Image: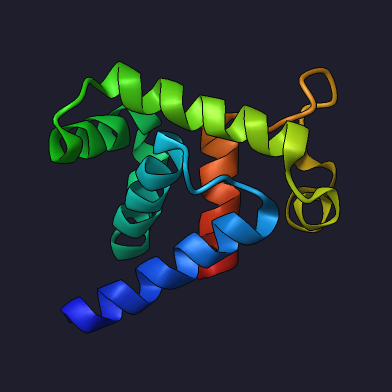
Length: 116
């Protein structure tokens, strides 16, 4: 079971890197953790992001606000500097045209859908 989780974690990280999420950002690690949790229990994404932030914050001994902020920052940087073609391929027209990037929940849900 642990080996399978590691394989999945590598696939999750690879996809994030492929679309341009920088692995040197704390938000990257937090995203991987949230995606791994949701891959184990996909219904958690529907319960709201706060619960997921708190689960990850407990693991890293930081505040849930820190987790949310770091993930949001990583998404913003990704949509400014990431692979535009890959981002469009994954997100298409689902991106909020006013903000030019998805919400954190939209981002996580889209990546989760792609990974399943």
